[in-house]
Image (cartoon, rainbow, N blue to C red):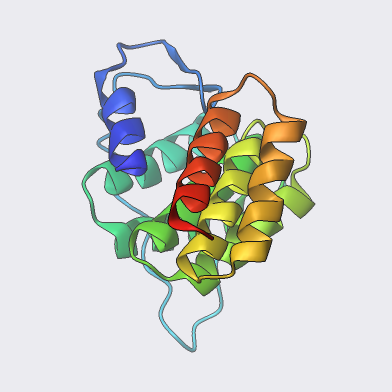
Length: 182
């Protein structure tokens, strides 16, 4: 539900607006750039682009986001992975990592999602997506019935990001856990 709400917000943004939770220009939401070719097993991944044109990075990121909006989670995961391989130092890397983690989360691949969100927190500590990633880490521990880890992570979100949506959602989940006796 959370990803659907966020994607709906992205879709309804007008051209040239900045999406608050990503800090990314939403554009008109329509991108006619074809998705990147899938990487097949046994083939080397695409080479990183040393100094890519920012417009190219934006187009590739927008394409991956459009695929995600279409609900094609496996294709979106592939597009975000390719983006991260091709543009490891992009200003969009933190956001791409976050949405990659979301593709895994929504398809209930909690182990891969946990790895991705943890990687974002470690590799992009200044990203505006860190609070949301830590919230998802708490949610994943909850889904995996690791109540102690879930509580610790959710409490950390509340303590470290007061006044944010992530903190409010963490508080909601903590209240739910208390009600459930967890």
